[in-house]
Length: 434
Ligand SMILES: Cc1ncc(C[n+]2csc(CCOP(=O)(O)OP(=O)(O)O)c2C)c(N)n1
Ligand SMILES: [Mg+2]
Image (cartoon, rainbow, N blue to C red):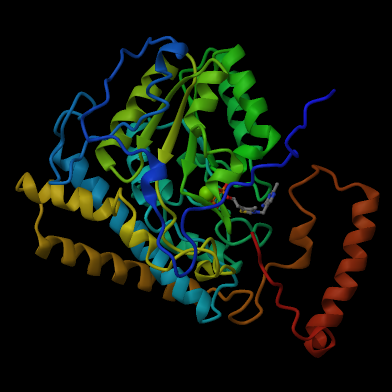
């Protein structure tokens, strides 16, 4: 006789908190600062299994740098890092307001995650190529050679938009700053980065790539394909997984972070991997340098899971109070990256509350002035002044093929009809969603 069997069922992960009931953050498995070993850069992938399951941290609760991952003290660099985070935060806050004021159609903040991109920017070298997501604006804002006016023009799709209105707002592209054009299709940039790194090695170059992806997007096949290629060819690439707990309204557990870690994916693919406190500027700096050195010394890829929290909404089209407690970020055990580095620098006697406030105000004024100037160049929502329709068809083929000529002709007729009488296409403002 066949024994009676249990009815089969599936497990559907759920977050431990929901609106109106507090999150239990015990699921994060946070280690103490300084507790995790720092292996030599030529460590075997399999020997990082424990590092992919724990959490590399440097700054303790008192703001002291402790343990083997603490980088050598470099006060000017840390001050630069803190300024970069403050600048990023000021830019985000102002652009969020600009969207609400209908000056720009769409925006995505990186509030709470600033340390990851800002510290990484200071750990890589000129010529290296980052393949970011829309939440690594800190890579640009940490630099002093990126014009904020140009960023604002991109957000406004106006006559000075370097992308000429062809990209969604926030989807910047800066070859000279090692910032690859952002893909709206999640995860595609992960394989592009590995391919770029492989090409760099094939050419016998010295430049490395840095790939970026969110927790949710690791569920895409491109993520796993990228890991296979990176592992097989020991591509000189840093594989960054930003685990900010959420993919719009979907909790990270549903992408596979519940019974294992995202860093664990790397070990399983034969890649040396770390799980790191992404709100700890010093830990991000140290781990990024470690991974960059491995890539530069032909020791192959490194996967780093950065643990952080998306403090703001996913985008201006999202309302997180519908799916998570409103005070979640205040209760997040890894705190605020800006406050933590500020405390550390004050402890070193290299910063003060007054300097902090002065820097904050200066960046706010810098951003406000940039936005104001950008507005003088028009914009899709400011004065309906957008790049000419012809620009949609340019820069694809050296010689435009006949079928595109025909499409351009048809589009031009429509365009000029609309320009003559915009009422024909009233409320044409597109709804942006990413
Ligand atoms: C292939 C693809 N699927 C879905 C989307 C819609 N979408 C945009 S962002 C996003 C969530 C991504 O979450 P995560 O990877 O965790 O990154 P985060 O936004 O948290 O930084 C989704 C589903 C998309 N842009 N591309
Ligand atoms: Mg996410």
